[in-house]
Image 1 (cartoon, helix red, strand yellow):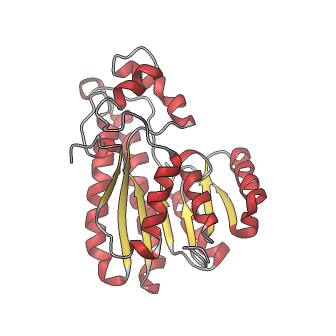
Image 2 (cartoon, one colour):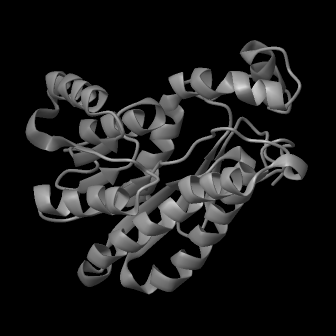
Length: 263
């Protein structure tokens, strides 16, 4: 028997990088999983690979943009429509675009970061709770970041949003703790994924670094293990929080950063 046999999970940004790693870990433990992503072609291809790896009809893709309220609510509600219930919501949406220091950041840049990295998570949590509260059970797992525990210069919108996600996690945990629902956050440090290579050059430029390799060295310099964490390590933390063993853990954050976090 798997740890998640009979459970249904919705995973935002679940077709690549961390989200896909979590989806594959949940599928391996018997869960049925609905994932979403912006690209229909890439999403369908990812699901086809999961099906070929043994997921069968337990995995389903819904196209959607994490900056759209309708789309993020759609993947939550889509899990219920497809599989009849919702037990786990892994809210993995977020990212960086054109960021800048506070002194030169535009309102549009600020709004983009807060909408994608915080408001979108609020929409997803609210939608998930509409299903979890009546059944008096559920797990919400928010993907925050090491940047939710510190203040990296040049990333004010992202840092503010990730700090805000941790506060939202704690507040919600106390609202629904007596209803059989846990709410936690995972704070990964640097994870080497394709998303890093898509956004890393710009982030390196903002931080005054020459390239992504220099950025990687900078981001792990305070780590006790002096290396990035892996997608598999992040997925293992999510699996623990979703499993029976995680039932007593709520309102907390798991730092998965090799010891980089200041607290």
